[in-house]
Each structure stands twice: as structure tokens, then as C-alpha cells.
Image 1: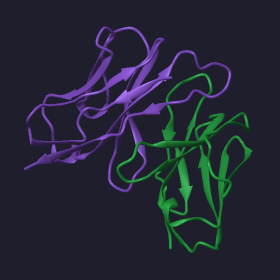
Image 2: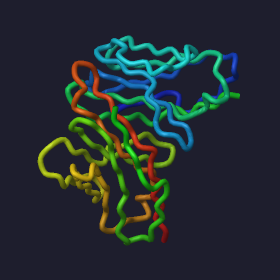
Image 3: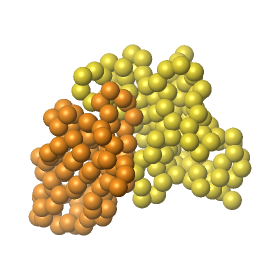
Image 4: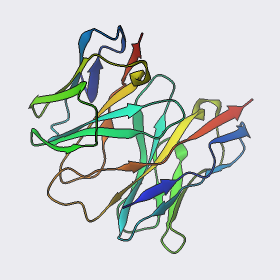
Amino acid sequence: ETGVTQTPRHLVMGMTNKKSLKCEQHLGHNAMYWYKQSAKKPLELMFVYSLEERVENNSVPSRFSPECPNSSHLFLHLHTLQPEDSALYLCASSQETRYEQYFGPGTRLTVT
Amino acid sequence: AQSVTQLDSQVPVFEEAPVELRCNYSSSVSVYLFWYVQYPNQGLQLLLKYLSGSTLVKGINGFEAEFNKSQTSFHLRKPSVHISDTAEYFCAVSDLRSSGSARQLTFGSGTQLTVLP
């Protein structure tokens, strides 16, 4: 696999479920990001990890819980979500000393 | 704080016609600038970037952009578009104050380019 991969690509979950999104980067980068993309809204940066430490949490509700076990993997744990959390969740990575971010294909999440 | 404004939310254009997608930014310090493209059901792909040097930068798929510091703009252009260019285009900025921790991008709200036959 090359680049940034995300699984699953599609997820439907009920409001009481617990699920996790997975992101893996094969680029040797040391920073990883979670974004939320909703229709008609700009990309929202949710979390940033640099060297496996969380460096940014943009006022994201606690029902979203990130985890970065190593520089290649990033998870987003989901529980008791709301219908308004339905969106495309994008993962990205970058080399800390460079500015370009490389994105995965996203997970389309639907909360019913 | 920095911000990015993409002036047109939708741009329809006929095939083989030229196109310009506009992007203006606001920042109190020097910036790096990017254009990304998003095809349906896909993530964002880097089209081109301006870090320093020549203000005219060339990217993939025949796109180019010009950095204009006095007008705080970074407009994207293509002289002749193809049906396959239909996608959403995002302008993004990163200011040079970012240090130590990971760099962060601020994105515009996107411009949907639709190429008509």
C-alpha cells in the first residue's frame, strides 16, 4: 500500500454504538491529522498529532477520542454519536518540517 | 489568525475554455499557499504549492497559480479544461509562525468546478 489509507471507507452506526476509524500512512511522516468534512462547510481540523503526541484539539466533543500508537497509525474512536456527526472524516499526514499534507480517501460516516 | 476566502462556490465552464479559480487570504505574517483538488468520493490531492521563489507555480494536470503578495491572492488557472477536471478545489494557507509542532493548514470553503461538454 502507498500513501495514506483509511478503513472502513463507509460506516453506518446507531447513536448508541461504539466504532473506530483507522488511518495508516506509508510515507514516513511524523505528523497526523483528523479532519471533518461536512456538506457546505469548510474542512474542520479536529486533532493533530506530532511525534505521537497530541498537539491540537479543536474543541471536539468528547464522544470523539483519538489515539496515535505510533507515527504510522491513527485511530478515531467513536461513541454515542449524534446525527449531526454524519460527515466525511479525512486523515492526513505530513513531515514535520514540511508543510504539505497528504490525505487519505476518507471514511463516509452516517449516524442513524 | 489567518483566513482563506474562495470567492466563487461554483464555477461552470465549457470544455477547452480557460478557467480561473480565485483565492484570497488574510494573514499578518508571511505564508505558504496550497491548492488541493477533491474528486467525488475521494480525499484531497495536492495540486501545487508556493513556498518561496518564483511567484508563478506550476502543478499537476496543467494547472498553475500565481502568488500576488500585494493583493494577498493565489488564483488557480488552467488555459484549457477537460471534463475530467470536474471536481472541488480547495485553497489552503499555512503561516510561517508555526514552529516546533506540526504545521497546520487553514482551508477555504472550496470551489466546485464543473466542466460542461
